[in-house]
Length: 77
Image (cartoon, rainbow, N blue to C red):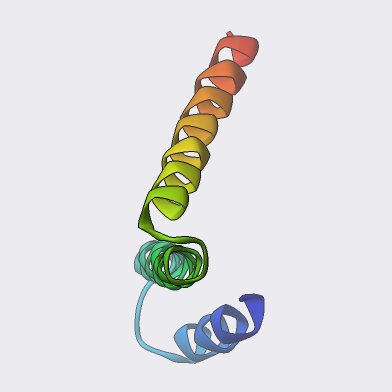
């Protein structure tokens, strides 16, 4: 996933956008890429395992990510 983002970063560096807008563009594009890959993975798992299994795995992944995010924030404080 880093190869397309690397090409985008190089193209943005040559473009007319400022550094702040380049960072925002990279952030949005990486989020969209992650959502697309996650969605395709979710659809693939639901097709292979059945919808209930894939939905459960997706829900567990989201909850685990939220848990680790909250845990890391508490650790920083």
